[in-house]
Image (cartoon, rainbow over all chains, first blue to last red; front, side, top):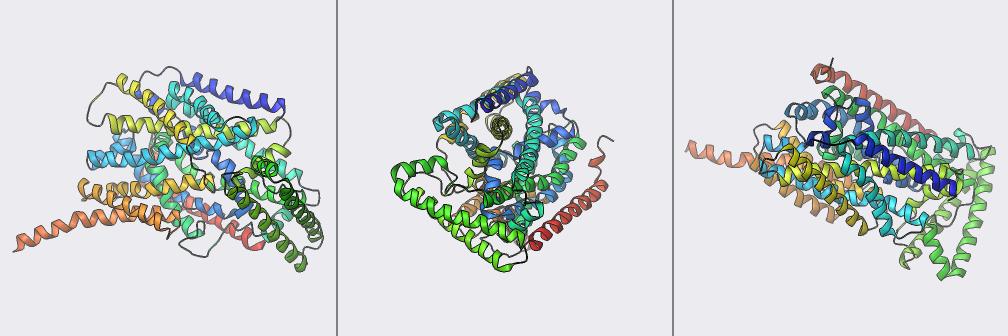
Length: 559
Length: 37
């Protein structure tokens, strides 16, 4: 990176840090620290919700996923809009009426203390781990650019945001998320326009879509049903609906965002607007991957986008890498010439077939290099999916913009981690530590600050040992899906089955969690379905446990 | 005005708007998927 990029990166991060500390102000009550005095208008609620969901992982992984697997990942969000309306008209009125700090307080009022403890514990485990992974994601970027130790990078990304999260609480988070989201949106649009502008003159938007479509990457809608298929319209609509219902309705990191709304109207409007803009925004992010794919059809790409791993491979086996690179270059040159020819004769099916065959050969070579690098320990990553977007940004965007994009990626991460730490602190303080005792607002504030510090340090610790997965975005989603179904099930029983009591729900939730972990280990369904199975199993088992003994009682009376 | 969305009768309009917009998007995405194959 150029010195200008460094200045832009450092200045943006420092400005955000100071802005957060300034906006956070002095906190005097727990309501101010956890819910920003419940004074936020709907558009700040909306930006907070979106900034909390869009982490650095979204930017790093999603364009790479579109590049290698196509656009079908978009279907994952299809269930979200409907879930937003359901939450707005079922859960928000309940949360607002009860004036709760955490979603799990409602569970205690409806059931009992032990069910609240269990629900909060499930949230703390899943959110605690996924926050660790969210710190790890931008740390990879920093360590590869700055050439610094990954552990130090983890502390840097987790440490800086901890400052304003610790001192400023929810108010600092809401205001920084507003700025972060504006920067994120501007950068996505700017980067997308630049990639389109940098394509060869003969490639217009129509040609871009045609090339992506013929190469099988414009697979936005896939209708084939398969339990083990991760992304198709059925898992997206049904599994995605349940996941969104659970994530936005019962995950404290999101609940605390819309509970900062100044009234129910502002909370609801913020959430429903999210339902309207989420899919178009995700579409734009994925389209960047498609544009990069078309760009590298005309410009030679490296044999692996993971340049650090490739350097290790090259140092150890220079002749092997040179041979593989020359094969790859040959196929790449061929790809460019066929692509140029096919654009002049778009109805020539033979040329399209040649392009597809050549692309298949390129992918095979690329994948074999990735597996050699993994097997011989030049990199711990199974693929270079997470490096594709960063490689493009680093090598092809203009000076100054590179620094800004990297800053935006780190800020996106700050937005979601800050919200997560604040919500983890709220839940562990109020749902776990203070569940038996009363405390003054001043004491609660002190405890919340201490818990924020604790979760910040723990998440950095988890980031240090984060196991590297095939794709980071999937790792976070899979982790969430192991617990979200059960949590949602508890809330569904609470809302819609008024006769079922705490004991039945508690044991149904415990049994369901064990069943979900077993199903995940058996690997019989894709992770999105785990949400559906988990939620429905809690509902079914709680009814079963609640009504079975009652039937025996009534038969006893009859006798 | 403040709590007008708490009124359940408003919910129906939002369901229609959100589902309608989702269907429109799915239609557009289907066009992109099947037109450019």
